[in-house]
View (cartoon, rainbow, N blue to C red):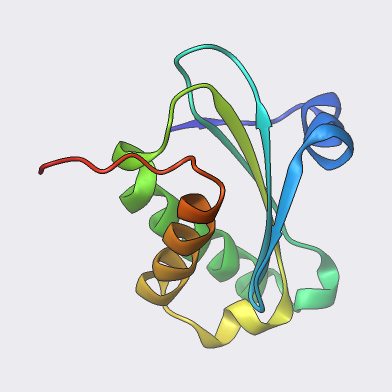
Length: 112
């Protein structure tokens, strides 16, 4: 999985991307480089201490990693954590991500 790191990449997702809202996070998706899926994660200090923010990032990364093989190539994703993500496990976050990706037609069914 390739990470988004530059500020302009995040701003592009916020301004031009399509947003999908869930109680635990908001996902932005925007067309990116061909053939690559990239992920950026934003967790503000409103979430809590560094331990809580890092847990939120780990949960999002694990859920997205499990979805990665079924995501349509060529998109950049930015996930903004909300406070409710601290109450969830990565499997629950993964289920929500799958619903959002299917609604956005970015989910490809594989026969694995």
